Length: 391
Image (cartoon, rainbow, N blue to C red; front, side, top):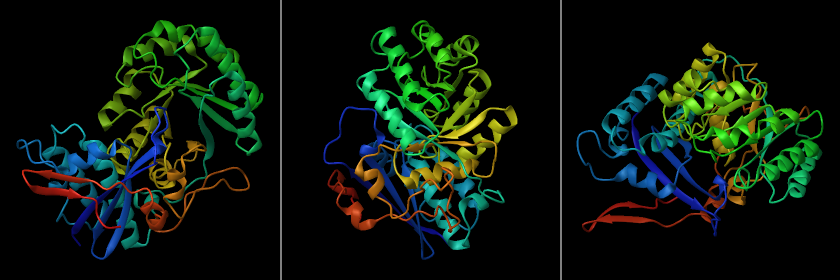
C-alpha cells in the first residue's frame, strides 16, 4: 500500500493562557493508506508545523515534509524507517522537520498496527507491555498552600508519585522555592515519590540551582527535572555531582536522537525523558530507549497533552519492565481529554496499562474534535497550499 494523504488538524481551546500547559492546543495528524487510517499527534506549535508540511521548497535540503511522505510504500517497520530518513534528508535545513515528522511517524505506526492487527509495542519487538506507575504531573500552585492541596489531592486520587513544575518556581527567592518543595512533600506524604520540574528556568546557570539542592535532599526528591536547557551538558554535569542522591532528569527538549544521546553521555542525567511527539516519533524514541538501556539511564516518557500522545510515548519502552515510571497528565484542558474516545486509566493497582488493541489502541472522538477545530488557509501567490481538511 502507498500513503495517499496526510491531514493536519489544528485544535485549540477558546483561550490559550500564558502558562506552561501544552494541552491548550494540539496538532492532530491523520494518515491514510490502503484503506486504513492512522492517527498521530505533534507536540509542537500547530501553525509552524503545518507550514513545514506544505511550504514551498527553498533548496534541495529544504523541501516541504509532505514531499517525502506522500506516495511512499508503507508495508513494514522498515518502510517507516526509510520514510523517516528520507524526510530528514530532504528537509535537513527545515528546523521544524523533526517535530512535524513526529506526528506522521506516530500515525504510520498506528496505521501499520491497524493493517497487521497488532499493537505497536509488538511491532517494536516487545513480547508484552508491562504496567507502569503513573506520576501525576501538575503545575506548582501559586502559593505553597495551593501546592500542598494539590499534593493531597494526588494521593487521594490514588497516585503514589507526583511531579510539580513550572509556575513561579525558580523565578522568586530561594526561600519561596524551598517552601514550595516542602509543601509538595507534605502534600504527597512521607512515602510518596516526589519529582520537581524546574522548566529550564536557570538556562545554564548552575549557581541558583545549587542554592536549592539542600531542600531537594531534605525532602527526598527523586529527581530535579530540566534545571537547564537541553544543550547545557556541562551545567547538568556539574550539578549532578552536587545533587546526588537527587538525580537529574531531562530530554523532553530533545528534538532528535543525537541530542538525547549526548544528554545521556555528557549531562550525567539519571532519567532521560522523551516525547514521541517531538523527537521524530515512536521510531526515534525507541532508539533512545534502547540506548538508555545500554547505558544504565532510566527512560521515562514525556506527555502533558492527550491520551493519544500518552499511548504513543509509552510504546517505545513498554516492554522494559524495570523502566516503571510514566508521566501522566492529570490537569489537562478539556481538549486533552475530549479529543479521544479511549483513555489509559489507572487500574485497581494504580498502574497504567497499554491497550492490546491494534495500533495505538486509541481512537479520536471526531465529534468532540470538531468543536476545537481551527479553520486555517495558507495561500501563496494566489495558490492555496493548505486548507483545514474535512474531518
